[in-house]
Image (spheres, rainbow, N blue to C red):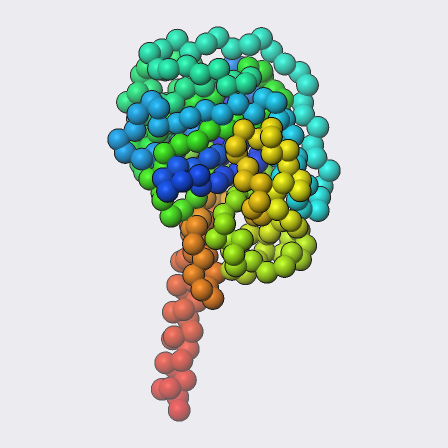
Length: 303
């Protein structure tokens, strides 16, 4: 997900990790490479459990684990060499001047905005215009994790937190893009999504290779459990050592939607992913169905 408070020049090599930690809590980690012209902030909309409070999110520092996503990727054969982070930096950002609680989270200054109206309590330099959010009405009762970026470009260590989620049976990946104050129907994606889910582990078959998705989960499974590749002691509890990792990639111009995946896998069925970028194909499939039905009718009339 790439919702920036101000315009950005580029965002690439985006990685997200998610894991349910309880019946109604989810962990999320996010990392990207970026370049921006002025001081900026990343804003992550979250389906928090209602009614949200400022402590509905617990921020986690991964400052000591810059290689968090590199190690997740090690569980799968490399597709391409890891990108080098950009080096030019700028002066640190000023702290948030507001009534919201401010957290020092590694190299970030972070706050949780419980409701849309609470943006009035946040430094207005780091607020996306209300007109932009109006174009995504289902965010009206979401909460928002805000991370101030200290540099104008680079690859900061992962942002991470645990939040109280209303989606008890699904894992949420925030992938909607807002880069210029506008919400475009389609956006360019360069994302890799990782998750851990014990129910996936129970149904997957043996590992094949990096691009073969398991037919039951829709994700590519890792070669082995996470502790074989990750430094568990540095992950601040983000990674479950004895679970597999599951990965999908999103590349190219896709529907500008969040990704939501069910935790459970129905027997003999593929998962019913709520991938927004599949929506444009619904009218096409409906049209094909009409053509086939019409052709069958004409055949019956001619016989």
